[in-house]
Length: 118
Image 1 (cartoon, one colour):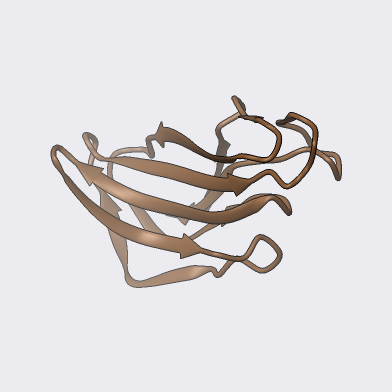
Image 2 (image 1 turned 90 degrees about the vertical axis):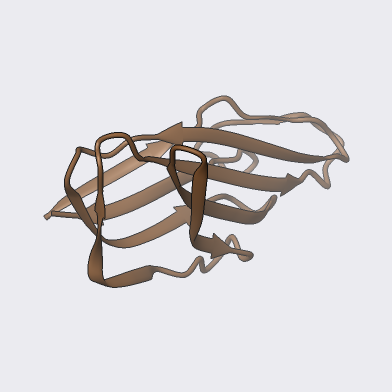
């Protein structure tokens, strides 16, 4: 079993604004993905993972809670081809008077995903 933990580290959330952050990620060709989840901190209002194959896309995961994002399990596992990508999208509502960036602290934000595969 392998775990891919990847993120968009380029977060800049202006004060008192809604911001959407997007990034594209790859997995090894032939990866059998059996579970996915995402992670943000408290300003996160939605995060999604979409499977992108050429011009087609399929939503695989959606979370609207930063505190307890769901773990989506796939039976049978999703086989990811070499040309396929995962698009990670995190949407934030910065309710503070400060610009918020990436970080591990309480006042910082994140946009991560976990893929569990073999």
